[in-house]
Image 1: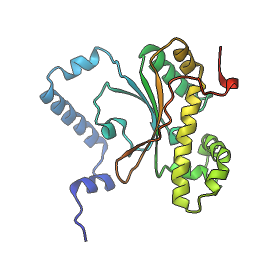
Image 2 (image 1 turned 60 degrees about the horizontal axis):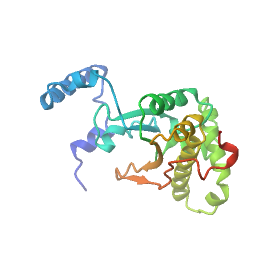
Image 3 (image 1 turned 90 degrees about the vertical axis):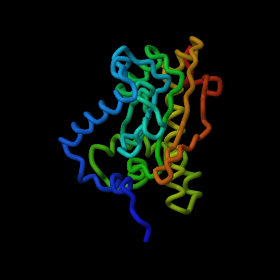
Image 4 (image 1 turned 135 degrees about the horizontal axis):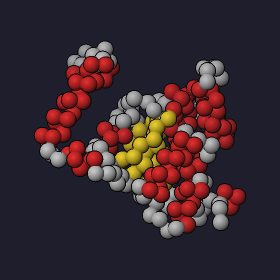
Length: 224
């Protein structure tokens, strides 16, 4: 039997997390940050200029800063269940508009993760509750790629591929927004990307679907 490390215990056993421990953790964070840079918080308070907007899943196991080894102020973040990008989500569009037109981010990355519960729920027929309406968008993605998915007999492989398709559609949907197209029309340096994070390895899978213009977009989605 392999020995269990303290890190593994911390990940799987959350009984040590309490309301008070969160505040204690904040004090430790402040202490450690000031030890590295006494002006750390003064610099943060002066404003933000992150080069990246991260659109990810709300899953607690996928923290943008931890898995990319970045610091506060370096990634602007929007998260929702199953990293859905849909043109009627005013919350997401507001974040995107601010990131692109005010912060002038250079990269927008849709980040899914293998083992996503929201994607798996959307692949089935069990009624969960209000979230079923949110997951409807993912069901539409499944329907779009049903032939490709049906050709994969193994459930886990099909599930993983569906996670990737959901991210790919997110990238496409971002490119169809007036916000992104407007930035490209004004020759703004902006790239849209799609990643999937593997919980079991910590590795990011770049799906190689980056877009830097609307050149290959179906004309019906283009704005003058």
